[in-house]
Length: 201
Image (cartoon, rainbow, N blue to C red; front, side):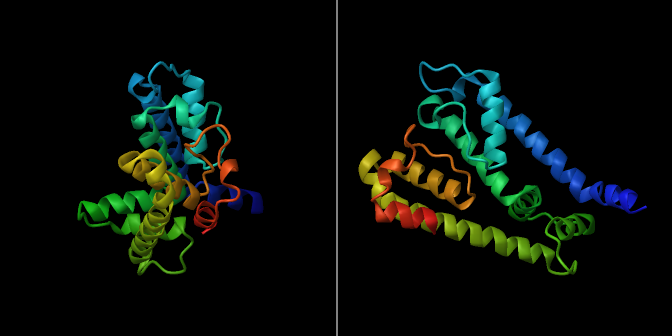
């Protein structure tokens, strides 16, 4: 009886939506990373590497089979950044963000899914909690990008430096462990207090 109840609990709408949502985003990410525009000049990407990169980005495991900095184009890096952000926030937070941006009314069923996803004690105020989560996430990531920019902008130029600052801030906040500084990762910055404190923060 207890085993049956456990199985039924796992197959709640929120659980199914999360599983299917993550699978769909990983599939979409794989397709996008397989496009020629996602590969850096002179590079070709094997579909299995694209699948692994999409999966590790969404699941924020920090493992890669190819060097992120040299394998992917700017478009590919943007795709990876989006996957990391999705994995860090979760499907319900991302869907809520879309509804809020489009100024669409969030249905009672969606509010119930938000409550189940985040294990909230009551239904009332669930959207407000997600809104605060999104605002807090954006504030922390932008602050991280600001501090990173003091090193990346002088090193890579303004636009590339800003892009690298934002990428590493999102990656650090979501605990993704993916970087754009080469195969040595952040090892060269072991004595750099700005990079270290920003990453830890």
